[in-house]
Length: 141
Image (cartoon, rainbow, N blue to C red; front, side, top):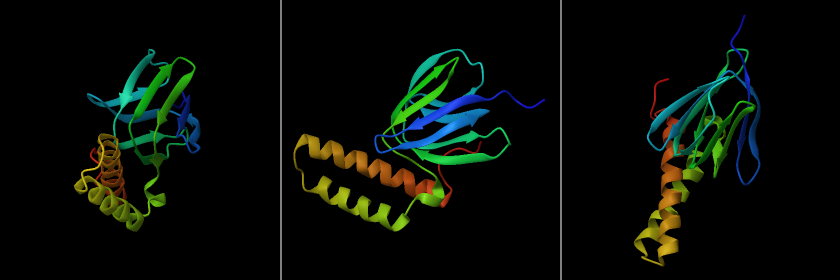
């Protein structure tokens, strides 16, 4: 008998990134990495930028880039609400490098505190996506 599955929803403001069944999930949280399987005790955690992965019931493992957000684990399923999520094959490295250059220029321009905070977020997102695209996203499992 295979592993038990759970309902996984990974949602961004733009669109649902993934909705379906999974047997495991590994996601970066504020104090490290966390692994989730079916019937886990409920918990909530802050998600940080990094590489995450989930395994489908057929055994296929999918890695993806995730940005900061929230993880909500309940007996009925798991939700990740994040600003951004992308599979490596969907990341446009040239576009990410351009976003990185633009954000760095904004940072050097020393605009308002809000502009600086936004530039730092964009730099983090672009660097994370470029690491994931290159296959050096930060964990081996």
